[in-house]
View (cartoon, rainbow, N blue to C red):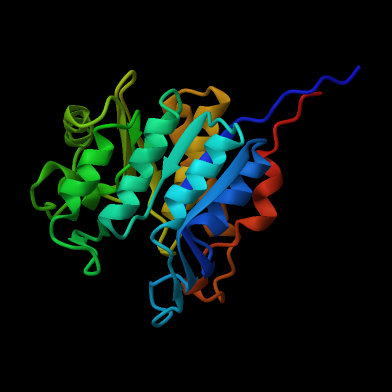
Length: 276
């Protein structure tokens, strides 16, 4: 006899970029393939992402986020997890905080998207690390990249590679902000490392892949969110995320336009959890 089990419901507060395989266009299919019910709350709609595809067309409605959350509460939706990513304004951060107030028992994951390659994004105001830091202090887990970890800690991103002890110490420092953290993109000789701290500490090293694509951070974050919502440990979730991203990069033709992201779609079947 078949039994019905309600999928875990995840509120995803990110931008929606129509072309380029990033943000909600990556997150929604990954979480759905993993058996969850993602609910999209776009902070803005863009024709493309902003990484090398020219100036995108934009559609934004500052009042939309709060109105959507109010309706969700009114119709009785509940969320097991609230997962936020790129936010462009303080008002969008306040929308995430409103979601926290309305569903205080949800597991809260913040991907503090603010910069990369040692520099903050030029489009964000100078005080934005403080805005995102306030949001991170309300989260259960934060997942900055190497640059964003240093922005949150209020110091310049160092040049050169880290050793394993230094990578672990960086993740540990972030526990002053949130009870658990995972830092991605840590340079470590010929490796790119991922370090976690909180209930468990770990450093995972993966061989550095020579090609770089937009959206791989969103792909990793979606995998981690989906795995944690399934009940996996953070180290297992981070390992699964890194492996899937690497597989998606390997699956992408060398002749493909890297600005359009990795070919992850044919690999979604790997994420389906069978209950045979």
